[in-house]
Length: 93
Image (tube, rainbow, N blue to C red):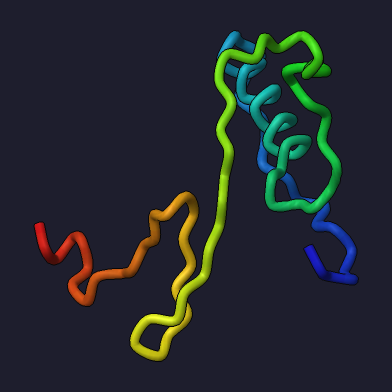
């Protein structure tokens, strides 16, 4: 990617025509088609999702706030805020 040079004409030989060879070819094709590092639109494998058919069972009301604590702005959602601890979690374990 990002090269203006021509593609190499030398390609590795595929495996012999067996069930494994067919799987290898399909996987190679899929790895090219579904390269998730490429930024392009992709089809949705689940199909169209109809939000109007969802039954509403619970409703949440979110309320945000901001407060100045010790000279720093602190934000909260529904009165709950988060502050990173000075000791990383993995080190604390």
